[in-house]
Amino acid sequence: MLLTPDWSGVLDASPACRFQLRLSREDILDGSGAVLDPDDERLVPAREEQRRTGSFRGRLRLLPKDGTAFEATVSVVAAASSGGDGNAREELLVLTYEPERLVPPGLEKEWSRHPLHHSPDVVALYEADGTLRYISPSVEDVLGWTPQEMTGRVTIDLVHPDDVEAMIDAMLTAADDTGPPRPVVFRVLHRDGAWRHLEVMLRDLSDDPDVGGSTVHFRDITSRVEELGASYFEGLNALEGAAGIANLTPEGRPVRFNDRFGEVVGRDRAELLALEVLGDVVHPDDRAAHAAELRRVARGGEPAATEWRHVRSDGTVAWVSATVHRPPRSVVAPDLLVVTVEDVGARKEAERALGLLTPREREVLGMIVDGLDNNDIARALFVSVHTVKHHVQGVLRKLEVPDRRRAAARVAALDTP
Image (tube, rainbow, N blue to C red; front, side, top):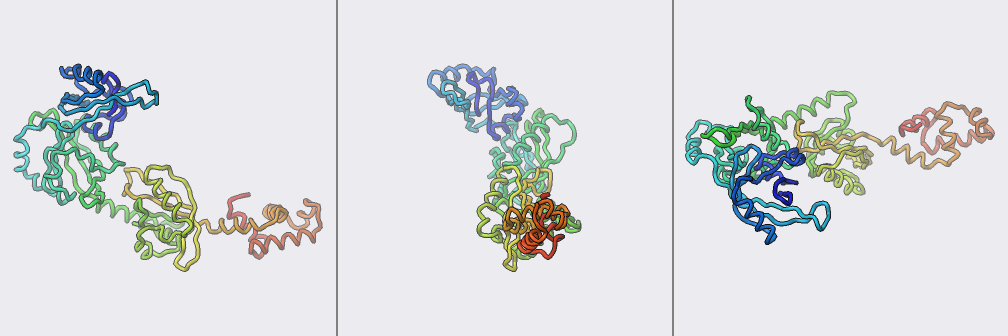
């Protein structure tokens, strides 16, 4: 956490700190993020020690936004200003997470006797500072972790990085919500390294003296998410003229795709599902760029149309224009990339063919597209009709088309006048 020099405000904080202290991004941006309890008699001596020696380490009382104070061991050192001015200083505060327990000691034992303790849904109790105080045994079935491995830790480090901000927002909303809890979906790390989609309901009971924290109920809905994703792609197959669309893992393994995607890249369903990564059937000269584009978007880059070549089953090459997206959290399977592809083979072939034309032949081709006959072209160019016929034959031969109409269609494939 980065503090102002007088320790009165927070300039920036890691997601884990913001989770424990109930701080939203807006709280930090508007300067309302003071976290050290001003009534703590140890605060002034701590600041004096840090100014005198350059650092401080000791116990201080922190005051989250919800007002439920807790103690932690903190270290504060001077840090260079983020603005680059070597004379300006900011204070870097590091929380060593050793908070005192805020939940009544007997509550854990009481919960272990509750019928929900044996529910297939996971029930958890968090202290006001974000520490997991109790979690039911079913967590091992859902996430692979034992209750003993999870209890006593701040579990935000198990939440998918893309979902951390949304989880903090949901937590802050739950603190202000007096109605029934609303389910939200997060991705959480399973012990085997896979991400599981959890439907979570939070209720803030910090003001309840018998609880002093937040209750969380969650269930694994990964199979439901995957079924919905499969149904979505099945629906795309029923749409005539639908684009080629696929779900890829960030590493590039095809997970789902519609029939049109296979048609565009020249591979059937069995071949695509057997691939370790889609890059295995990308032209060798384009594989590095293809993999780099997947990595760029997976890390948060904006979508951009790119072109690469796929090698079809028969060995021929398919040119595609592809756009890679990271879907928003609200849609199915937000941990997968969405790739849309369009067959641009006709355009690439037209570009190649047009590159063979001389400047005069390109001029004649433009007039053919405009609908001029040989006599009109001859008058416009101040040449003989015989010369025009010679140029027209050269255009048709290089474009590999039998007539003027097909030549105009070849130009239309470029989407140019």
